[in-house]
Image (cartoon, rainbow, N blue to C red; front, side):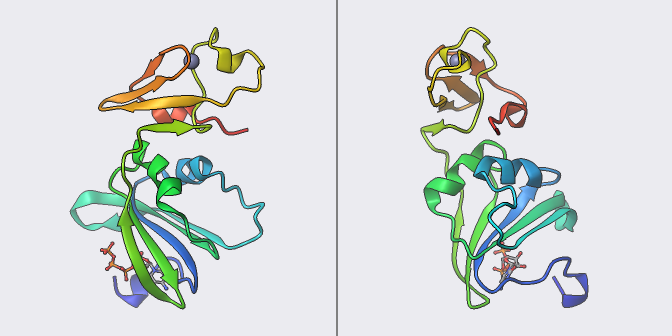
Length: 153
Ligand code: CTP
Ligand code: ZN
């Protein structure tokens, strides 16, 4: 992308999440538990043109290097995301999100009788299936609209 097309500045140090589905950036931040209270720079660009794919979102998180385990939860909503670790303005590492076996504390169970909805101090856990996720407590399955079930307090 040429400089006159650049929507948000390059960052000095941190993590750039690229090739996120158009419109998913705020869900991505919610899944990572980033809400701005950290006090460090977070830039979001939504629905920027991206070749034949149409629109993509980009999120730049400054002064924080996300680990593979931290970004893997994004595979549920952004399986094609590219994760770029930036140091002193250079991309020093590029990785893809990988599908984890399970995700903890990220999704809320839609089953109102589930133990995780009983006001008990139980952290949610969902096993990741090929076509959805399954609650580790009541076995309720979520197949579509996973982003609608984010457990963000
Ligand atoms: N980036 C950034 N700040 C930097 C370096 C890179 O914000 N100091 C961003 C770029 O704007 C881009 C992403 O990190 O969104 C990846 O950078 P780079 O690897 O240089 O770009 P591409 O080769 O286009 O990426 P890809 O391999 O994903 O096609
Ligand atoms: Zn459940």
